[in-house]
Image (cartoon, rainbow, N blue to C red; front, side):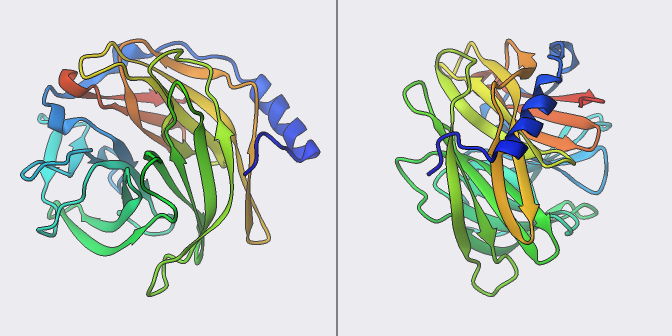
Length: 297
């Protein structure tokens, strides 16, 4: 397991790149309220082929509670709940990643590493379950809240992360994934500790993550003191995934600089889409909201 080791040339490049990023102003005023219901709190979000619609997952655990939903930014009713396609419901879905090269197909992941390959039909607003698999070495004491599928064609890779706490760092893992084999296999390549400086208390170093078009990794760090808050979140760029000759590596960059700050919300869902970043919240008893930054980077 790596602890902040860097190839010197790449490290220098990233350090210069990140140090030139100015800290952006808070955009709290852009929140759109989704729901006041706790069971509709958003724990993962990904784009669809409709630029105004986003698929979301919920970290619900009880029967009768929704696991997935659809947010339509332009609709009168912002949220539509979708039925899970099987009687057996997933537990505690914490992350959602679109699959590169496949339209409206995603991997949803629970906190214990159970993963669900699902396909969204936008016209009928239904979900199909294609396949299930599990992250290797997952389960307690790890609490996974981050998942990312990256690459192109048959050469796909996967990254996931333990969220961490006040007393422990987050752990970011990455490896290769044979998504199109009959039996999906993940080969762990490496991992690195991530220690985010702010928020200071009730900390989760990594609550969600995504990459931009340059493979720079963005993450949300949150403060979660309980079901009624108060909550805080900060969005950071923390490093770069590099794929060279079918091999993937992660280069961490420090110091971490806050790109966005949210003083009243717990951002557990993050999607970077070309020139915009979409944030969604799991504010527990206070409900959920969505926030979109245009020309963010």
